[in-house]
Picture 1 (cartoon, rainbow, N blue to C red):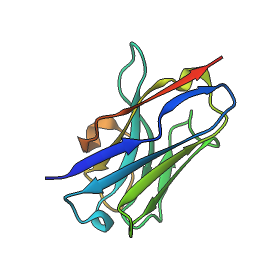
Picture 2: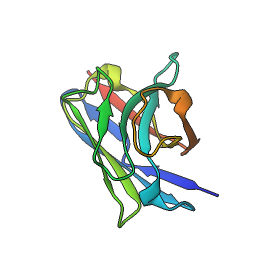
Picture 3: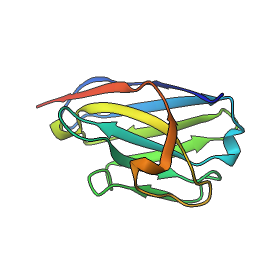
Length: 125
């Protein structure tokens, strides 16, 4: 059974940076695509960034593009989301999740299963 454990959330001022990490166990990590998704207060869960199994392809939401960077270390079974220039509207619970696709990135929460427990990110103005 796959397990995902996120870390790195917290409180930061607008303009600041945070680095989220997700450690994955129970699956051959180098065979699975991964993603970061988030759910803000009163909002539906939304795609933030995704990466293919070999790390060659990444995709970002329009709101994340240019500010966030997703990466992975297949030797350490971890996927990371570097978030820069944070805005109050980035406040949300952030989840890492396993994609149903290994070689493409689909920007839809419905294509992800096996979610982590989430980590809270709060950006103050």
